[in-house]
Image 1 (tube, rainbow, N blue to C red):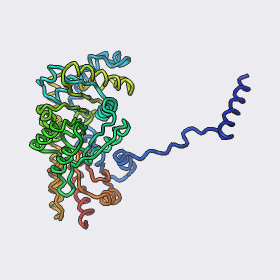
Image 2: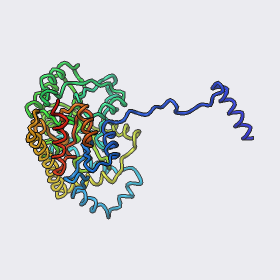
Image 3: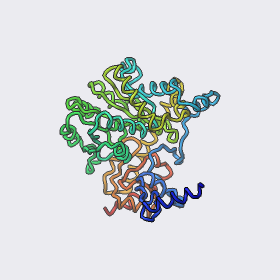
Length: 426
């Protein structure tokens, strides 16, 4: 009986398809390679003992190895005896989730901020900074359909993917000046001024990715004032808090300037870099609101979006982060470890610049130390980047972005000599 049924059904499908069996997914072509992960793939395939990976923006020690911070080790030990597995079998408990959000937003607005005391923010845990950005992009599309997002030129490559997949059109506003290798402030201000009132802007509060170029405090104040006049909405992606200056509060200063001026803001946070928890995907999204009532409504919408996307995030990383941030001793240790990481990167910037200058390079390398954070936007052309890869086994993205975390005292001279070789003839 079933054999006859299947035979008749098969004939039916064959006839309706013109005697051709339906071939599922044949029309799917390979996706374009991600510009950052493809660098890592090429690096891993290289057998050279002198190879250097300057692609991924995750911290490494001076031996080029991933780091497990001492505060993370202590947090692991503290939760090892806890029965958090019972929580993990269900949704993340509201207590754990709320603690993460509560401690995270203190890093944004300040420990004693009235915003926190009054409950004027809608916050949810997210799958690191990428997940937080994706949640906000979907929130933007749902409640401001037809709106656009203005992004810095350039910005982190994945920003384009995130807002594109949320079906939010993007525009670019001036940011980086390729000649000065610094901020194109006048053009930036013109673009902010000329954008339609009430536009969404994606900003990097510190350690801009990929350029390492941040506005000064005075420039941030001018930007914030213009945003208030134009009624723009700033969304901050804070993936590298602490890496710009070594000071968590100082790196949040730009956001606090906007808040002081009366701007409502959104903020994505990631603990992948400043806690070395890249694989745990721990982050937070918060939206500053007019009052506590509005915050309740917005939080419910963000939770509903998250519910449909991934329900709830893994609990282990959340326990680590919330444990560190809520324990005064562990948090103090983390603050010191962030400072150590930032100082090491700044030290290597100085060494790399001096090494290039000692080679009598005809080029100006001041931007290496003028820029801040994890990345150096080197100014190297795609052709020069390709020559570094083929001739010296040094890997970075084609736009010349170097992850300073991949530079060590052991390879900085080799790197400087290689850069000198590929740039000395222009």
